[in-house]
Image (cartoon, rainbow, N blue to C red; front, side, top):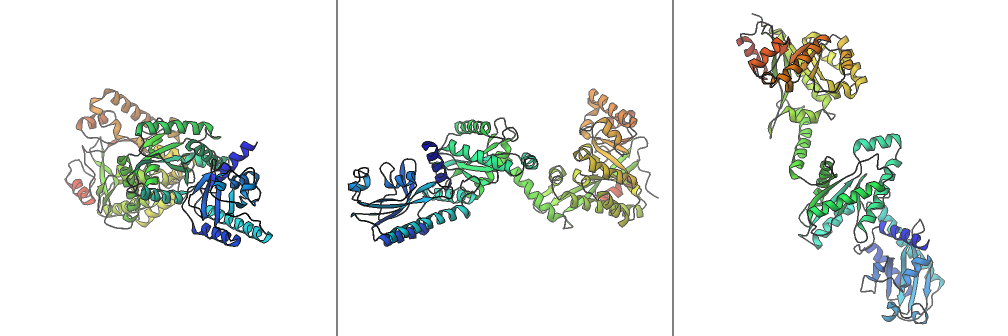
Length: 589
């Protein structure tokens, strides 16, 4: 039982992160007052470690620590009571102690006790002559001990130690990293970040269990890290479910990553919720004094996210991958500004051809972005980013407004084309999306049939209930719908039958090499037959050769678009193309 209590006491001491920390004036002021009250040359805030007494503050003492064995402060910690020794030489236990050998004769110590009842050490005064103490002196020393604990708790509470894990926080990590840079400039280490769970796992756990889900996870991880790192190594609680620590100096990369993988496996097996979460470790190199401490956690977190895709869930920082993510984030921020500036975003239009007559039946509106410093940014790069954020709504609103404005101009000029506009999954989760589309139609005085909204199978499936409600509202308003990227989603045939769409667009991945792929032709034939049986009109995307166009016509595909007919073009170029194209007969005289 004594051993168990001692381990708990040491754990409480280590959680406060006081050992081997720099001097502090707030503690030094207390030890000076204690020395003055007793009119003695020596005073200290002494912390009882496993095998030593360490002085957080000291007056009249040259060294920072002494052995715990036969140290009176250790007895204070063990007995949890005040200790007064009038003369060490007359005490059987301390007559041959290190303090007695250095000339100390008198000792008085008061416990430094936490709210939980753990004694960290003592506030003590020492003299070189035997003496007694008065009640007023001991009352003063007791008050100063209380002040010392208040100072410790204040440092613990204000911005340095996380109350849940008991570990130093991100601020302390950054400060310690800067201090190491001054103490050992040029030394190479690794910063390690442990990420306890994915965001979706945290969300599920909070929904089912509540806040205790994260509390238990954090406390398990903190306990495991303290045990794995041992004495002399510090773990930091740097975010809600993330921990960090530094490797020993100059580790061998391969062996160290393997060691971390073993540590991660043990930590997961000890967790109470190991089956509900998946942990990952990111490792990033650090050159003390050169690497910016503010970048360390960012790059380590980036490595941890990349590690989730690896076999052992431990990953080294990859600058190339990091640049990709940095570019995506920058693009996301810049697009918000681009929506408010008239010169960056524009629409281009790709004709849609009726294969039986060769006439242009419509065009697809496609968003393009010319970044002020990066130049043209591919929609395949920025659109997937947008669709996962709050920018999906304003971006689609911009496209709807611009496309319908252009459609209204064309109709006034006698150009009769149906304009296809893409809709993202996020748009179908908007409760008023169908209403907003109708408002844009009214604004530009267009009939519902003047446009066609394209939506992917996957977009419908992400929130099938709300998405289906919006699609039905659009259908009831007379707005034509098409299923885009047909064949790449995961909807069932029964679900396709319920969609209120009029057309399907076969994805270009099935069409691109159609002329040289007999199995591909069989697959496309089946897709067209199925679509016709379900009552859909079929449009093929990505037609790049005359042979592919001929095969699609033989398979009774109604319409096609692709580079064979025309590339996406600006509105002026489309107008000229319609006039010059021998296939076109829909332009008014």
